[in-house]
Length: 419
Ligand code: CTP
Image (cartoon, rainbow, N blue to C red; front, side, top):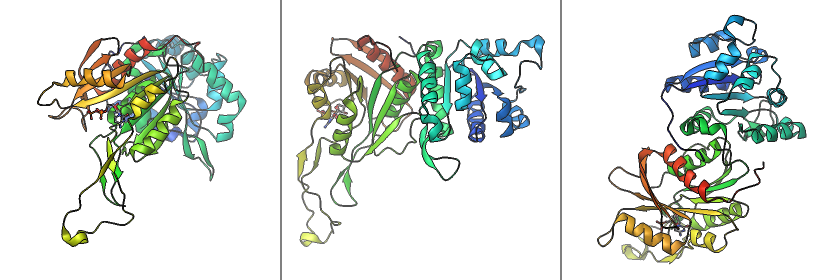
């Protein structure tokens, strides 16, 4: 089990760059890493330098750049770089680079460094769809994952030419966010503990439309759900995010299903949960929806200007439905944002909710007063069906996510660790 220790400021990151068109996007990854205080050593392959030159990498990283092991033999660069790194991040990872890494080749400084690195290694592939889907690449990716590397699923979208499909490099800010989630886990990330698991996370807040332009909604930003998704990706899981009206970019490597209302969310979550090992319901799901939805914009003059009453009906409780339909061994996690009420405190309300919903874990956080929605930091108490209560001090949503996943992993049945 990994324990979340937090990304050390000034972590040492090796940014490996292999020879693909997307290597220009690695410049932004480099920039963002150095701007957030990390020491970055760029190790391009010789063919990567055909796309972006040595001078650019050296100037932006503030470090010398080499591609082979011959330049400074007395330094034994591959051993030193590999040994000192907290993370090796390969952006983009081409089919050829991964093939060479799988075979333990050491024909350039990057592959030699990959052989000496004992820290977490993250490959962010980018290539044409045919290359990504080729059985040779599939097998190489599977083997790298089996050996403990994180290989990010490419995004689906426009590729270099007019073609489009899976193979696109995820957006640089999201690559950096994933790198941070890996660094937050510390050296434990070198042994990802969610490999072969499917984690489903609902995030954001549902909208229940009264007419084509107006809705009943809530203030959930989706940040905590996205942080859980990123943390699960950093631990090697396959991740599906069911996103209700979230304005954030897709987490690198996740499959994102967009929904609007509670009923849409219910369908998408049940579909994804069918083969899920873990479902985390971080979305704020509306308990009620308007009993009728007008097809046209409601006018204020309607009904003689008297404000119309809004008739409501109940939405299904998705978490309760998941509990009722639970697969053997599936771990179900709820979130409860509470303000406390006149008769009961936040924790008391949380315990009653957990008992009612029968989930395995309920992450209870206090909202209002600068905590919870729309903020970067969060504190929580995680209540377990076994009677446990684990406090998580005010911390980043990334670290809180890892702490929640630690508790989830404790409850997962042992797996025949697979792909
Ligand atoms: N939830 C759900 N379906 C709903 C409402 C909530 O699956 N219709 C899930 C949320 O995603 C969350 C958990 O249940 O994980 C708790 O949500 P919350 O809104 O706090 O619970 P409610 O059942 O609405 O309880 P109450 O109105 O009493 O606070």
